[in-house]
Figure 1 (cartoon, rainbow over the protein chains, first blue to last red):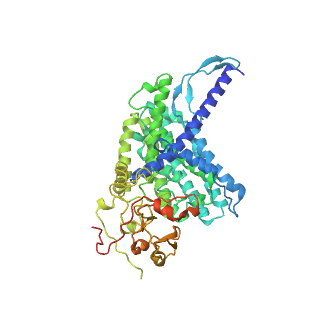
Figure 2: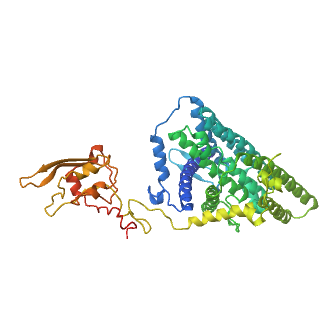
Length: 397
Length: 168
């Protein structure tokens, strides 16, 4: 093996191991944060016994789930019943692989006894796999997660699980369209689907949330629906479906659904941060775009973590505030509001970008001006219930 | 003819979707910073606004006299009144003619903690206690014998006094 290949393999292995470990720990912390956060919003304390401030509670939960009995209800379709948790667990972990989480590190060139020389030319991108198809990969893989839920619902041979699975397939398919369409405007501005290029484009101009607020709102709402979180947690719906698709699951198989849910939330938070909030970009400074160094990498990693953490908290905050949508409202919002708004917005942004290039005016002021108008329109529509309202209210209007 | 529904036109401030959502978000966020109501039980057994009532009827306690003997004279009133039939009493008599319990056992699993035994006791010997931590490793340990009843040290219940219903 040449030193180059060895260096590449070393860098890739270290990145995979570190990212996977940190990611799993982050998922554990997310479950802790959810429980503590919900408790604090309800004037309680939440789990605070295991470890400092209850931080080791997820470890205790994981151990408990390993030791509990694996139940196999009599009529379940056994291969699918086993496959379903894996099908939702694996895609939610894989998707993080393409998200860049920090500024690149400098390359290395050193020699170890026995193993020989390792070299890595140029900066090491801080992303497990900087795929050229970037976000398309995320959309493709994360839509696989719906199979996990549908299969779980189907193989459980339980009517509640079945209903949960059906609801979830309808919901995820509906919102995937809005999700995919809302990011097209991001690609119009960045000119590339690779996530590191999207970050670079935001460093060159502005964070896309300032230019594409409507797309951001659409993406945020769809992301909630995609991850089956309140106010769109209809597949689970404790009150009516007895937690839906994972009613029949126990022990580690159940735990996997749980981990998958939080992994999906974290990935979505990271994705929102990457697409609309500059990824690992530190605002108001160009220092982070300098030549690769360890300090830059650490600082940008912190910036990325802060943004992701904020959206994680936002997820939790919304969950413990808003009530669940009714299913027809959910479908109406997805098909009659999100989809047309997303399509219209693509058209508008496309025309503006094309027109600005033709006329030769600067793109940024036009976009920000347009954005103000569009956001005001969207907020007005939402606020007055023009876009989403009960049948009775509409009849009256 | 179809049923018609009268729809009320409300001012926009009241029906505004975004403002209602934001208001809700502010409410949940403000609760994060409020003092918590949780009482952390094993360390903290009462708080400013919650404490065990002195009328609480928990597991029993037998009071003793100066010589450390149970005050019970084995009159048999408590097993007689006990609605759950959980008191086992075998009376004995010493050479001076004093009655005392040979066996006095209370099955705390059968007991319904009505407190009648305390009310009926002419010697103020058997009491229900202000006490609730009763965990044991064996079922058989829940039959309290005389020795155990005498050894309890927790405060005894004041019960409810009909002439002072508010406990003042």
